[in-house]
Length: 231
Image (cartoon, rainbow, N blue to C red; front, side, top):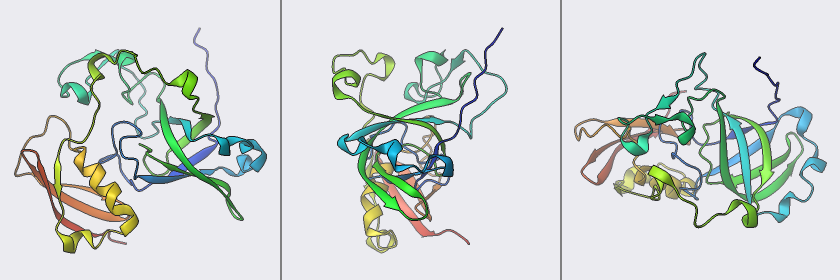
């Protein structure tokens, strides 16, 4: 008999990503990315966060709500292996799992007490789409959670920046100053699907209320357009 558990959405994230395209493939890769965790009304009690200000990082437990499927596969094709090699789902962080649950380590900037939304957590380095439901928040404990000598399997090498980003000054000026470093960081990580290498293809994604379109040739990414999304 399969047991089932009911869980409550305690919060949702407000981030600059309206769709999953462009989101870093792991948390913490772009520290300049800012986001906010806003609690659902039943959980807007400041007492629930008492003592949290003493921690620099948090674990977010959340749901791949845009990747829920009725069935699951025991193997998946992770982007780190080019999207062509199958490995066991439990050897990956793929969203397509028996239970679509994810875990992200993020930096806590500050806790803001607001009159309408109660306590809001301002964080950095999140890899969540705007509106993603959060199930739990836990403090990151360096002595227990950091394992410098742990083996990383097929993902042992850091997924760092791989592209040189070129953004014409007139286009960059359309991006709010406090979002420019974050956009550069996202683009430098190469947001394309790993199996796409067409230098003539134009890619686009939504970021901070803007539509960003670009091409990639070799190791150089060139931004072609940045404009406000249609209302």
